[in-house]
Amino acid sequence: MAEDLDGVTDPSDGVLTEAAAVFGLLASPARLHLVWALSQGESDVTCLADRVGGALPAVSQHLAKLKLAGLVRSRREGRRQIYYVDDPDIVTVVRVTVGQLTARTYQVPAPVRRLREAGV
Image (cartoon, rainbow, N blue to C red):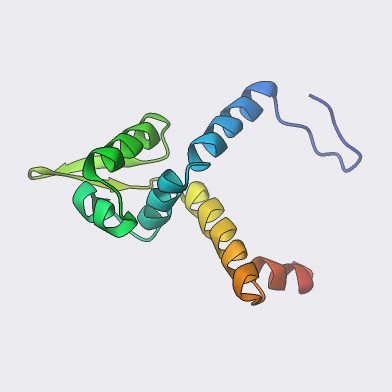
């Protein structure tokens, strides 16, 4: 691992590979929308399909990929599977990214930009 001028160590190749895989999964607008929706609260596949406007089988496949990657978890509630994001860091990344891009669209100062301007 190389160290840069600020004393910060570069991540290992394994960590970078894993991060690229996560970003690759989130590069799909459908999967990103699902993670966004789940960052707002847990839901079952039927409600998620309605919310994101996807076909039930396609949404189920996207959720299976997100679950396999460890970005989404589920639990059984009667006959339904309830999906949720169990990693607050993933929720933060998705919310900040989508929030920043939304703010740019409407040219409104985004929270991260305001923090930066405040010297935080």
